[in-house]
Amino acid sequence: MAVEVGNNIVLIATVALILHIVSAVVWVGGMFFALLALRPATGTLDPPVRLALWQRVFERFFPWVFAAIVLLLLSGYAMVFGVFGGFANAGLHVHIMQGIGIVMMLIFLHLYFAPWRRFRAALAAGNPTGAAAQLNQIRILVTVNLILGLITVAVGGSGRYWG
Image (cartoon, rainbow, N blue to C red; front, top):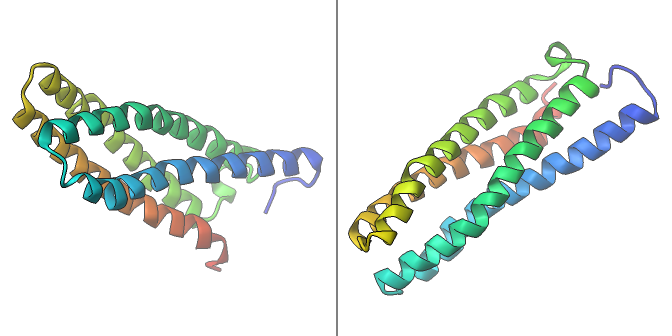
């Protein structure tokens, strides 16, 4: 329920919701694709080819994740403060989405600044074993984030009907 009724609130809500949904689809959908379609398809590739492919994939995907994070935060808080008038008026599902979303963002930032950095350094140093170990760490973190992302999508999609 919006704090005030009017064209501005409808415009804010509409634009923010669209940006929020599209950003979530990009991030969660990208993780789903990477884990459940691309990863199995790369299993037959020789390790140097597979590692180079993952480097190219992540170099293209991670900027989209950063953009999604920025848009999720901006659009989410635009809805909380511009539509609901603050967290006191937002439903439980909004609080749950924010909490899980922040955990997901922290996991991604760790992934980006630790295993991803080490993965690139290992590849640059010609250490495929080290790169593969870091790729496994990335896979684990992406798996955790995918599960959290799917839960968040379910909460966001159903929360307004909880009662």
